[in-house]
Image (cartoon, rainbow, N blue to C red; front, side, top):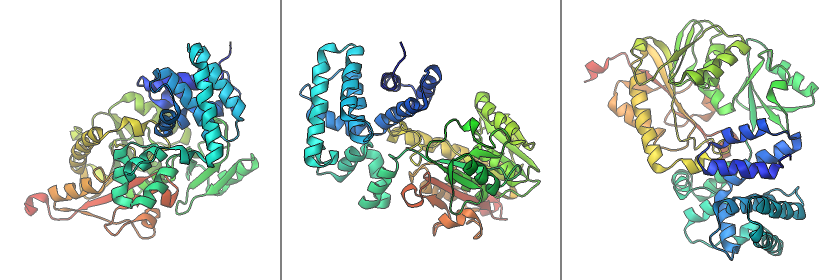
Length: 455
């Protein structure tokens, strides 16, 4: 018997609840199931949507459920049903309710099918009467909790944003992070041009747009199907990479013939861009602790036709062979990912203040060690895809306090990152302002005076 999108969504959500990563569990389900494209799209939307909106959906269930405690599986089923009713206007109410009731029966809750039916239909009636689901949420005096419930984030993430942005912008950022992610491409200038790729996509009936400030970026709109089937993929014309991530290599700005060390390279989008920016002349060392993570990079190296990239398996906290070797060093550190919560739906529930502190400790160690890899006249770029000051501004301020001979070097005024530079000299991309992943990056350079002389 073929499984439906809703059944598969329930199974994937159950796997995530038990600890699986959402993208891995969903990819496995998509590979094993024989679904038509529209059903694959519904499965993907249900999984990521229910995870993103988990706190909101739970608040509504708690508001309307006469049975205040439900088995975990039943709550997941209710989330799948409610998400369709509230956020997927294209699905008829009867279809959403009836399939959810059937799902409850199939999952071993035939005696609670009436409860499921009653709760969903009650929500529908109240939404119609109140003119929107937002009016059904519990009234909360605390603005942090109110935003957390309405936009479905843990309170601590809302607090981090609120302290930087204020109430209105935090709400805008929360809304932005709940939208499905864009698909951005970076054209491989060694194999093609933006104009050529743009024309090929338009000829294939795929809507494509230029991205402000990014000369090699294109953004796809609407359903595009399998990426491997798109024009130019096999020829190495382009690479999927968000526009914010593309800014990093422009900030590194490696000259042709230089030695560049990418300390945390996998999955490799920035590594590949660095090689392209150098016209594939010189050496780009791609470092990562796991050889398996570098395999995907190697596949793209071959597809894009690059020769200058050399993989290095090892922990970048301890690779003494690179001391003093790098004309440029890129340290794109492991981070909490608060700038990519729309892409990694479960990250908002996985990360905690404690995990952020652990990441900060790791970032500090990586930063101190990577600084030793830079030649006297070289530069170090530190980057994250988070919007947490402890991992960004505070991390750099602490580094500069420990290493007084280092200083921030703002981007070239004519380079793409200059459009996002702050008065402090670092680059910060706010998703709701710039319609890209949230990113932080800074270029650091050591003065001619040695640290021993400064001491």
